[in-house]
Image 1 (cartoon, rainbow, N blue to C red):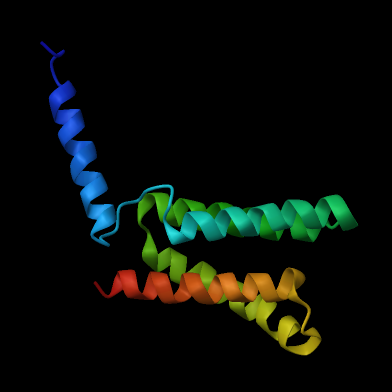
Image 2 (cartoon, rainbow, N blue to C red):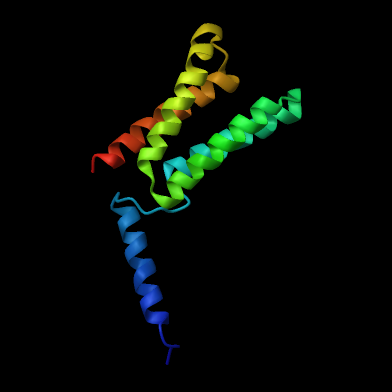
Length: 123
């Protein structure tokens, strides 16, 4: 016999997984915001490690962590805000220099998260 409550935990987890497989928001670690946020935060750390850029560390770290938060808590409106902010900050530089790192990568990631968060808000 199983301890009290363990059956409901299994059912809750199964329902959570089924929702993720069917394309419904799940707040899981595989959320687009979590993945993109992790990459943006890692890029901020790399910018600091390679160039000593505190601006990269702070802006990349904070915006990456905020995207991770948006994904884990299903805060898609905030995700749209962060995505637009990243596009406005990094997009023009990428358009001018055509350099993939960091501008191109952040521009692509923020465009993806903007589309994703907008879609999730409209569901």
